[in-house]
Image (cartoon, rainbow, N blue to C red; front, side, top):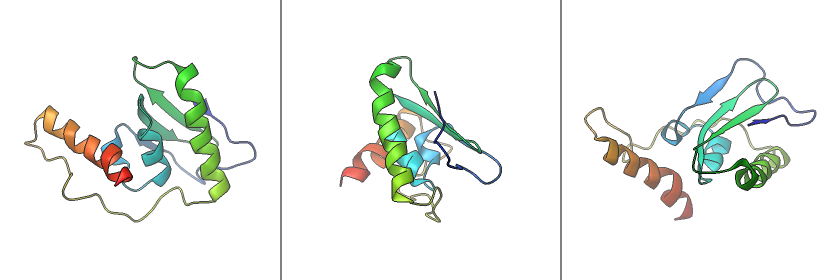
Length: 115
């Protein structure tokens, strides 16, 4: 779903596409959006933010929370990107199984923000 913030520029140039939460280490907004159950993709364009969802969730459930997170982000004037490097302890390695990769992603996106 595409969210177009009124009178706001999302990115000055280019785009950014986060296909999974584990890649969102450098975007505080993307990390917050991925913390919402059902969000599986975040895309930044020049004038919009697109959010993807899993089939298990309906937009009528997700949209208010996603909209609130995006609105709070623009009110806070927090930067879209940070210099935060990826966490080494939950970095997905090539030899990790899919289950291990999912566990690391859950630790990084759902557990760590609450601790």
